[in-house]
Amino acid sequence: MSVRQLNRLVPTPDHGRKSMTETNSTVKKLKGKFPSSVSGVETFRDEVNVIVQKKDILEICRFLHSDPDLQYHLLTDLCGVDLFPQTPRFEVVYLLCSMKNKERLRLKARVGEHESISSVESVWKVANWYEREAYDLLGISFENHPDLRRIMMWDGYEGHPLRKDFPVEGPDFDKPFVPEV
Amino acid sequence: MTINMGPQHPATHGVLRVVLELDGEVIVKAIPHPGHLHRGIEKLAESKTYHQAIPLTDRLDYTNAMGNNLAYVLAVEKLLGIEVPKRAQYLRVMMAELQRIAAHLIWLGTHALDIGAMTLIFYNFREREDILRIFEEVAGGRLTPTYLRIGGVSKDLPEGTEEKIKAFVQAFPDHVKEYETLLTKNIIWLKRTKGVGIISKEDAISWGVTGPTLRGSGVNYDVRKVFPYSSYEEFDFDIPIGSVGDVYDRYIVRLREMEWSNAIVEQALERLPKGPIIANDPRITLPPKDDVLQDIAALIRQFKIVSEGVQAPKGEVYASVEASKGELGFYLVGDGSSHPYRFRIRTPSFANLSALPKMIEGNLIADVISVIGSIDIVLGEIDR
Image 1 (spheres, rainbow over the protein chains, first blue to last red):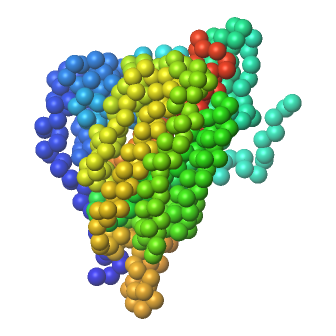
Image 2: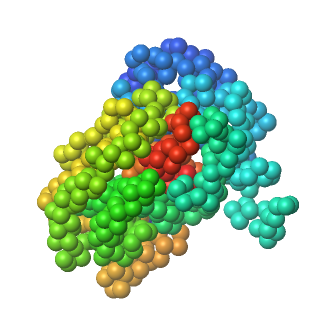
């Protein structure tokens, strides 16, 4: 077998695709409670992704957190993905963990470049810093966030480094930044 | 009064700046300002191939390089859908646990030093040196070993290393007792740590705290038990938890954790299976050097993998490990090319640090030092 043929043999991504989405009780509950908001469910490598409408994100998170059977008490991660040049441009990814059921769930919501999405800081405190990071590095804005400031870059920095149209070496790598003293 | 603690301060363990609003000696408000060590690792990794990103992960939490390697290669392996040979899994567990001991030794030494107990750091660095020597023999590097590869590990144990690990494992429990004689019942230590920096169960979970800091508050959550990886389900170990959630509980949890890590290394060494140390998948792993020198197809394969990288399928995965500070996870989005489309690192210290104001507000300014020490932050992984 030649190397080119070998390279084409990408592993099949249908790892238990059907069984997981049909039996997952969280997905069932979520679909029953928010039928209009859940716009898609995907499974890849035994991980469940639920795609939801951004207008309902806060309600959905509150429900997942407070439902006695689910108890998604830990927000493991929250981050943004830049899908440039698609529209809406960004995807906000919430990775939840239920310690009680030993389950993970990923929520995804699309947000446009000049839109904003509700902050989930009122559900999980840790979202405060995660949302600040997504705001800083990608420029996604969050409504009702108590303290939406940059966290990695300095105040007054222009641009959002994790965006796909931002060069890796930076736009000003040959012009060093000298603050006025 | 408002004072700046850091970014240049010996007890902030790196370049952390905390703005403290004081009323006398009591902290009214604390605002941490991370970001001074931001190197853009997530952005940088998006322009590298999957193999090239491994050395970047060493530099996140530089006291826990093996654990970082492990979290990253687990994510890539999940994305590619490949199996890792049993021997490699055991070697990974062994190295990750030795690294956890080394990381906890640094924490213990510096934490005690911050509070004023100087002796301990010399004891700790003595044992840590043994571990780093083992890493040097196995991988060639001490702080940044880059030992793991996608599909396995880079080298097998060289001759004589097993004996060295065995000797370390046998001697270590006595060393822990030595540390305990210096601190556990020391009246000054107790006064500086008991009832200081308390965080409740519910608060700790809400603030996303993981690792020994969470377990100190009495939550039994350890990724090794809840979502086992790399054959951890085959090892016999306990998860120590605290009750009050103060600095002292976190200290005890980490001490017990070192002992359990030592037990895991011992078990891995006893039951180390024979066999290959890296998966034999021509699309992903480099061919053995002997083949490269004799077989033209193997040479071409090596060239292709090194220059073009591995093509991962479209899809997204999250894989995490219990690193020394907490849950370290990698969220990778593959787009079918040889570069990750999105390379997100969920680092434990970032979330743990965000809970710092919760722990220190209302406490005395002198306690800030002991609380920062007890959550064991490393700025390399907070700022990335």
